Image (cartoon, rainbow, N blue to C red):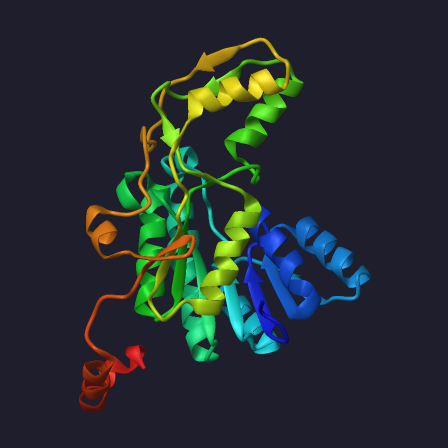
Amino acid sequence: MIKGKSIFVAGVGSIGTELIRQLAPLNKLFIFDLDETRVFDLVEELRFRGCKISGRTGDIRDKELVEEMFEVSKPDYVFHCAALKHVAPSMLIPREYITTNILGTLNILETARKYKTKKLINISTDKVVNGDSIMGQTKKVAERLTKLYGYISVRFGNVMASRGSVLEIWQRQIENNEPLTVTDERMTRYMMTIPEACKLLVKAAETGKPGDILIMDMGKKINILQLAKDILKKANKQENIKMIGIREGESLEEKLMTEEEEKRAIKQDEFFILHRLGYPETAIKTAIKKHKCCELYT
């Protein structure tokens, strides 16, 4: 377990919040998010428990503010959990997703390198593999940038009970006696819990190497229609499901890896690891000596 470190967490959504709660007792935490109330509440909660934590409201698109946070925290570890994550809105407001998921990530990466951060863990998504949504494509670029800068990414499937997840939507619909909405009877998804997601993040920080991508072995995909039926049954509700059709940018099924990645993935305990492909370290160091433009790879 990580302990005695200075840790900067960008993004206090469902995963970021749980991660912060797990890390705060043994480390010094600095948290950063646009949501003023979530930052304030989390800082107050953990300070009451005796944790060393401070927070700041702000936007990862503001590079000066990001640098100010790094100057204050001088983090050993960075967990980059801040992103716009919904598929359908990304097709309507692509600029917001590009500036947040790509340029915002670049601000975090450049600043981490400037302050010689030991490890940075970027949250990626299975939608980088075969989805054609703006969200998936911007996260794919973020994943590639993270690899380029020598840091680590983790790919998640759908995180159950996270903010805005299908389970949260269905819970609200059940409470309002509304039909559960399902896009297509053929749709399948990989599902993981928030604790499983946090476990993957900590594992990446502890064992990941520069440029690695870590992916949890999530077993079989779940049919979303069947999941809706099971939830209604457990809630003792009559089966009431409304098919709404696939929205632009969505896909019937998602994969955790490309075919090429599946061939070279290394299984380690509950995870698959994709090591960075590229020149051997000796070749990179030789090139750096000859060409100052290769300084990025040091």
